Length: 325
Image (cartoon, rainbow, N blue to C red; front, side, top):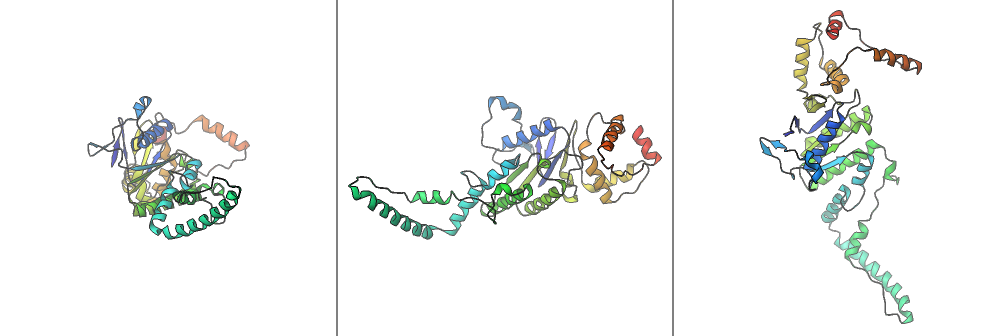
């Protein structure tokens, strides 16, 4: 499924990574998608976001996806705490319906009636014409004021970002078991929340949920070397720079390098993945520079900070000549 913007297309697959250094354009893409698949009316000043998202030539309805946007740690916590419109409240309500708590609630009502009778007996001793009462419907409101905390009793704010995201994805999965629907999860600047190793664990969980449910996930990221290049999600990588480019399947990239690499060097699939990981955010930048004096200055500064230079592979003459063209 492709979402067609005025100048380019974004292919909505089970897992999409929006890479590149054009953060303004990525922000526009995310805001356009989130706004389109919401129930909120466009304001007068939001005309730029009113893109026509086309699928097979037809405009995609605004209710096609149920969309959740995560932009920071607070957004995750908001979804997993109990509030009127939170994801946890949705799960909690589903559980109350499934478990048929009417009998248990009846017991609570009986105990509350006794408590209020004792209070009113004392209150009415002075010939008061007032008494205290409660409505049974409010008992459910009382239960819904439950507090979400970790299993060891810690405040959920003490959980790290990966733990919070794991709980969030599990909550999505549990709710989909009750109410199957098309879900779009957007994680904006996820490289600000997780380090590279944590991100790999996160993608493992994405792989699991996307294989079992009708869920599409979009992540935006821009830190050098920060991208997941596993084979099954490779063609979901979009690079947003001066040119918007979608990576083809990994086999096609491997074939292209084998056929066009200047020195005829043979590369394994892993070699190709490692190369792409390092350059992915720079693809489509215009103009671009390979060897610059700025790198000399950078090395001078890093040497004073005792920073260790990453060992680089020496280029042969054909490779060097190709770069210097």
